[in-house]
Length: 110
Length: 117
Image 1 (cartoon, chains in turn green, blue):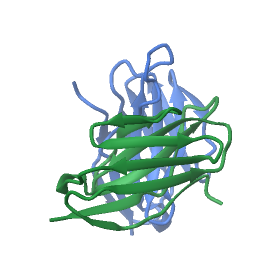
Image 2 (image 1 turned 30 degrees about the vertical axis):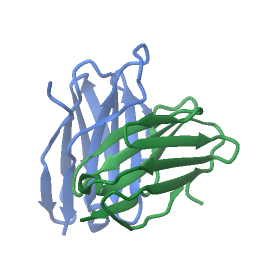
Image 3 (image 1 turned 180 degrees about the vertical axis):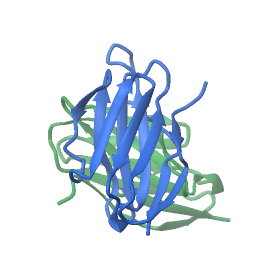
């Protein structure tokens, strides 16, 4: 079983749609949680950290459920520029390295 | 400010040859990470350093792979001899010291796309 699991997609949505991605992680000792974004043939970049109380950054909302070991990302009012692969990422306690999910591909269509 | 710098950006080599990938982290960052990305396995950690010292090399596939960090501004990842299954994008990333806030954020370089024929 992979440590971080995501639906690979692709999710094809029209502009303006709301789309949600989910992710589960297997290590209950995981300490920090993130969503990274990766454009085609580019490097991953931090989109947002995920906090226990949930957090929002503009059109993006992230949620964490530690009991279920589940992380989500909601994108409202999708833009063409949101088309990318979204990587669910965790960091385990005592370790600085990140563990990446395989990513969920989003394609926003006009 | 310059981000993480990697060279070369593309490398095509033949099986059996030695390959050396290079990375310059962001100035002031004391963590450096090497990751590999393939379609089959996704993005996976190979090794990471703190203050030039290797901390975790459990992701290094086998003895053909070696990594060094001779100083705070330079690291290499060497594959000798290379094999076709080593074909991947190799990313270097760096992050701030523990004493700073938001130390979890890792900044990735543009990657080296390696093809072994």
